[in-house]
Amino acid sequence: MPTRPSDANRPSLAALLLALIPFVAMCFSVSAWDRITPMVLGLPFNLAWLVSWIVLTSVCMYGAYRIETSRIARDSARRGANDSENSPE
Image 1 (cartoon, rainbow, N blue to C red):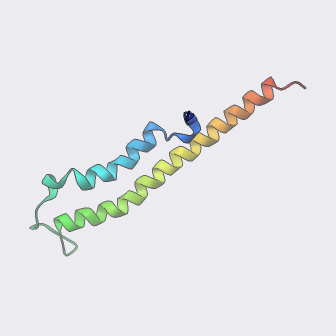
Image 2: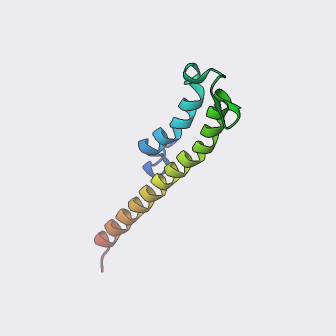
Image 3: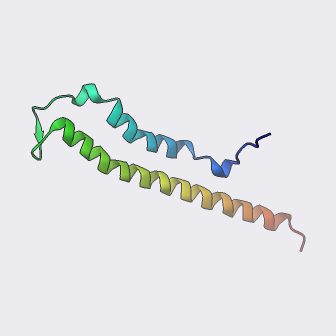
C-alpha cells in the first residue's frame, strides 16, 4: 500500500499559486492580447506578451523557490526545537 507523502514533500499553496500565474497568463489570456497592431519593441503585441511572460516565469519560479526554502527551513528549525525539548538530558 503506498504511503502518503509527508507535508515537507508537498509544495505550499502560495508556491503553487505563484507557479500557476505564468501558465494562466500565457494560456488563458489569449483573447485579451490576440492582436497585432500595437507594436512593443518592434514585436507584435502577442509575441511581446509571450516573450515577457517567458522572462517573468523565471521571476515567479524564483519567488516560489524562496517561499519553499523558507518554509522548509522554518519547519526543520521547529522540528529541531521540538526534538531538543523532548530529548532526555
